[in-house]
Image (cartoon, rainbow, N blue to C red):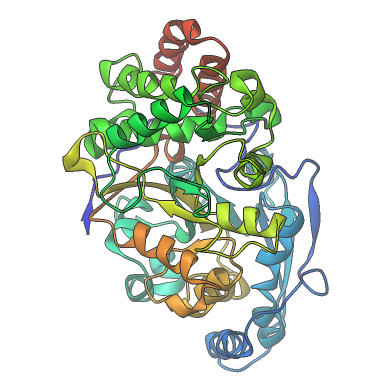
Length: 460
């Protein structure tokens, strides 16, 4: 696997910033707190639970050391329950209670905890810039010391280790990793299929479908203050597949301009998708007002309202969860994001969830070790909600072959590069979402918004 050198943008002070929705995570609304005990829904294969319990017990040398660890993230609802279920074997084996807070405003709460002298123990974040910021302020714990550099190297590829390393110290464990691809219903979709499909082929098929009266694209962009985020990843995926990983990485680091020919070309390609009601279900206004979780339903109407949807690795859990009668592979499948420039066909962008520690008590070290283990990764895979980043995850842990294929698609890529949204400061990330949403509504807004993005990236 080739690793694209990660370059991060310089961050301003972030006290008081409002956090943004993590890509692929539910919009949970109000803050939710509580222990995992009795609050999560299990149902994992017994052998995976037994293996996780054994690993957790081994971490604490068979002793129930007790104590409480505070953990903050964004998950709410069913996603919260799925994640907390993966911690139950740890709690039972170690006697350690995990107190979880789920909130969109996690960045502000992290900072307020530091300011008060009572920091959160562990944070689940989606932004590498946030990690670098707190590494440089000295608030994060070096995981090479806390759980061991050899342990990290045994469980993660160089790509993920390098992305969370600052000045030789490691400050993050990748748990879940997200990518974006094209989803379809094999029973009705009549467009190009296969790993070697190009964007030109998809575009030609979409144009022909629209001309024949069949709307090709499904899309849902409504997400409150974060409306537009799914479209942002569509544009960034087009950018990666056209301009390549080096430019994409430089853009996230503030070393390339948003108001550039490369970015404009990506928006130009995206404009064909959202040109009108003949190309996207409900037209641009319909896409803006549709919840992302409901967009895929158009593939299953009779006749289909739309046939193809760009969305993340979590799509299968949402679509199949909404309609349990659907079968993975038979009623839902995916295409890797097609290349515009052939040499970038195997380049994959990613985001996801990274665990970082703000304290070094024994119970915190124990939980971080567990979160970074292959046994916990197997439970993450078994939820059917996420792709596990750990190299030791057993593909058989995924509940179906479709999800295992998704993991192979991401982790087997020759080149992995974090999407700019995984690197940039919150204000820039928010502006990216706004730029794409306003572009869908009014393409003439692009000029001013790209200039604003450059100003924000420069700290202006």
